[in-house]
Image 1 (cartoon, helix red, strand yellow):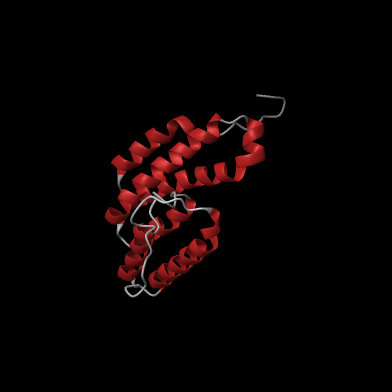
Image 2: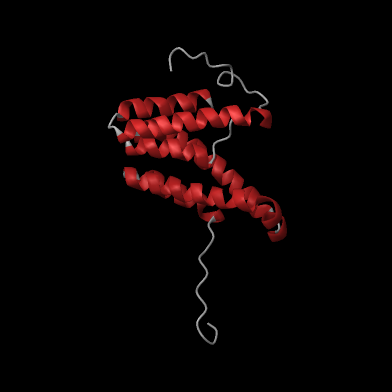
Length: 165
């Protein structure tokens, strides 16, 4: 981790097009799986350090946080490093909220035909964020996010009773 020369994605805002996706995904999966392995063998310190390195090397300014980021944050919370994860959770919450506002502005047909999967992943990320914060015992931040996400929360429909409701 110390010998690899990270290259500028972490220093300034850049245009990162999709041609970088295979390389970014390779680093993402390698760092994620290694962090998970560190957790499996009980080395939470190295797991957290590797998660932090990922978040540093692939910052939100060039690689917008999404469901993939949540996996690193979950590891950090599980490892007892909630205090280190929380600032990144705040950024992920804002990104997720902004995305959900966008998806909510679309017509049902546009959402279904173009953004259905992204919408579902953003809703899942919202739920995972709140669950991780709850596991960490941060009731104040949990309440803040529940209030923040209230405008984009989808109510569960009541099941239809025989003969109508």
